[in-house]
Image (tube, rainbow, N blue to C red):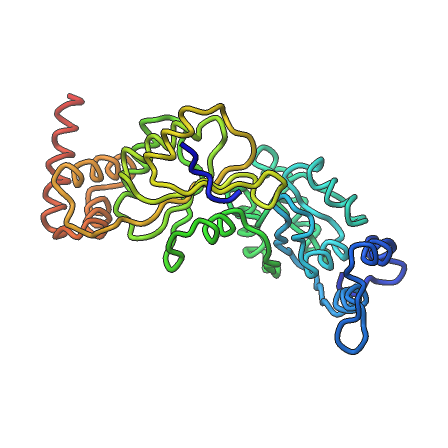
Length: 336
């Protein structure tokens, strides 16, 4: 069964945008040094545009390529070239980006394990009027990374925070999936443990939107199996190695994807799962309501759990609240 369907703002005095030196020779061989409007070559137009990008002091959230360096934006290059420092998850990964484009800014590690220590240092630089760029290893920062803490601290300190948009694996997978794009929910990584993963999926089962998940290769088959069981035969897609040489997007109902990946060797690369919205909106059955309530009651109180489940299922809030009270009482009796 084969279900594969598709395979700087102007540099300051003494400061140059390092990639300029070799852009012309490469452009000629790549066929892009052709006259643009007014006889200007594409390379000249790029240089001209880079000089017009204003980069002011503050924290700049810069999206970087998710695999293909050609996806870098001109504004991202201009910002990184003007930055006094680049805060990044892994200096080895961002170091390759820096070398590829001739950047010179200092790299400052910023990740889950050092955020408490590195954050104040970065805020100190920003208070001194520096330009600091925040990047992730790939894609848009703050999407499944700890950058939001730094952004919150910068906002609290009255520092300008600027978004420099660009590549995002979640959006790239969504638009290539062939699934509805008018309403979608990005749910990040599903929990590693099966019970927690199924509880999370129970909460998402009635969301009237396309669902987007990140997943690791080692957990892909197990997550697809749970997705198929909890969400049924919804149309879905698994996008792997987006923008890279071995990019592929598999499109099929969840049970078919689960069966295929369950029978194959563990895949490689970065993976995004996209699942279509519920096909219909019938009133949820009693078992489904109980499942959602039990999952919600583990995280919040009766009132909020009932409100959320009522909104998700279309059941009367009063009835769901009464059932939540009963389930809570049952759980208390069981603990006793």
